[in-house]
Image (cartoon, rainbow, N blue to C red; front, top):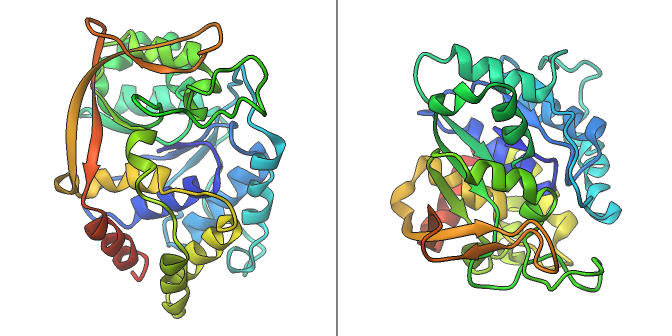
Amino acid sequence: MDHDGGVDDYLATMLLMTMEHVQPLGVVVTPADCYAEPAVSATRKILDLMGCSDVPVAASTVRGLNPFPRLYRRDSFIVDHLPILNQSEIIRTPLLQTTGQDFMVRVLQEAPEPVTLMVTGPLTTVAVALDAAPEIAAKIEQIVWMGGALNVPGNVEKSLEAGQDGSAEWNAYWDPVSAQRVWQTQIPIVLCPLDLTNNVPVTSELVYKLGRQRHHPLSDLAGQCYALVIPQDYYFWDVLATAYLAHPEFYQLREWETVIVTTGLSQGRTKVDPGSRKIVAMDRVDTSSFYDYILQQWTR
């Protein structure tokens, strides 16, 4: 798991850890939509809460070209301070001394069979790992990535980012050069783009349902996290992408030929371009089944 510390990233990590058929090899925190220290701390506390303290955490030291707004990144401090995550003064989940990118290289080199990378932030840590050890590409079964906007506007607002045309999605925009680096490989990519996530909002009804499952710590934590963001337009970005690992039958996929735009007004755009790199994207989802699934998993 490679996440970048946004509210949805913690909940995607939490969902992943409930999947019985998944063997988590570790969690890397990429310092993009967060401040690194509280994001790493919150991640470790969540793994403690879930009894997954045997899953190591490593902090990536990569940097992007276009920083996330500070207003977005401060959520990492809020989540790290939630009372449900601070019932003990000791964090048991280990924080590795090695960097996240080096940890990714080592895990892939040592893996006895190909590994899926679940990436809910920018692709920078993956790209840096590939540059350091190109042979690991053969050990990556697929990259499931929450990123990009194919046929809808992006979420990098022109009013916040001068010189942008509004076509880029933030995880791609943070470091489009690294996204392009991954696009240059032959690694299968399954994309969860804004085209799909725009249709799966976080609703008040769902947050209320999470709160009513009050005797379940995971549901309580998810409800608290989503309550932080309910005043704004918020969607199941990372959680929707991660649920694909457990229930691909909920999703319809579609193949696209795409490029990553790295310069100019469309920097960070995931552009449909016939004849270019083939990926598959999540095109449709059974929304009711998805909602039921996450409500069920967070009562575990």
